[in-house]
Amino acid sequence: MLVQVCVGSSCHLKGSEEVVELMQKAVAEHKLEDKITLAGSFCIGKCNRIGVTIQVGDKTVTGVTKESFADFFAKEILEPLGLSNK
Image (cartoon, rainbow, N blue to C red; front, side, top):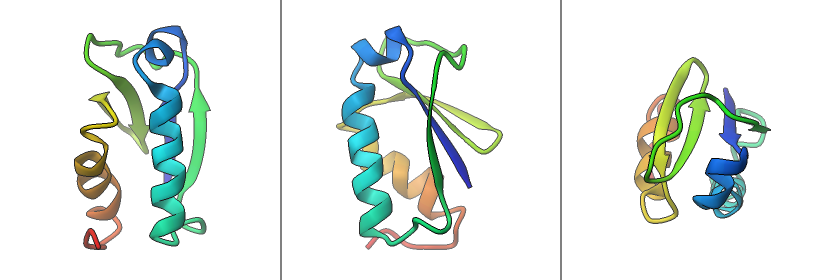
């Protein structure tokens, strides 16, 4: 599964660095290094006012913040892989 976190200027200002760190920790914590390819991306073209844009495969998720990250990870990463949030 390819997961691209926008690190363009707008998302950078909205906390993409923190979201990338949370993503790296969550992938390692769930031992998903062999299932997920994590990449940075410049503007994905779906900027919003709230948070960071993340592309998971062909799906684009907008507004991810450090506060909403756990829900995002459970719904968009763990569920499609058939895993429950531990």
